[in-house]
Length: 215
Ligand code: SIN
Ligand code: FE2
Image: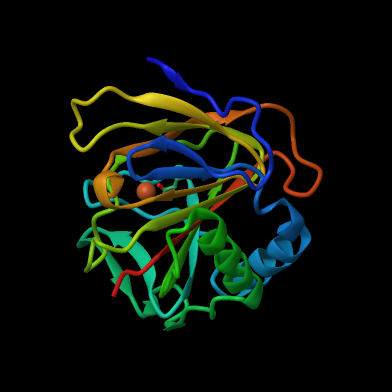
């Protein structure tokens, strides 16, 4: 397994890591406290939950969502829903700080404007991981995926368009942003595990925001 390296990353510099994969190391760092407050507010309304995949397995990462739609999984399968099944209400709105951050990501990546109707929020603790998967529940796969890493470092897995393709690992740090689209939009990806010390703001966990246009 080879490692994709963010060689001497300078915050805000866009790095092309693959055809259709850009990294913006540390871009979200200036937004850290506003993002932490926004996530705290969202999970007050739509608390973290461990969803079940259709096979019955419980996901080790906890999740919440905001926006017009939220990603859900249960025995009936994976899908987006305008209603949070846990509360029976609409999901919380996308907070302004998410919109501001996305505008900057659009500018720096050259891939915007992004018009997300959902943000899936993943929370990983020491034991959590996310198996290799494709993001394929969105209606129009032309729209990119924008991923923001907050808190502890994680080893991100980046494969190819098929499960057989070789998988590289990328160390994602607090504030790192990835954008993938087009030739990489259907690439398999996942999280092997968390690494490194606890984070002053997020403690021993890691939060990942993925913005999508799903509907
Ligand atoms: C995801 O694929 O939904 C999350 C990836 C990550 O946590 O970085
Ligand atoms: Fe994903």
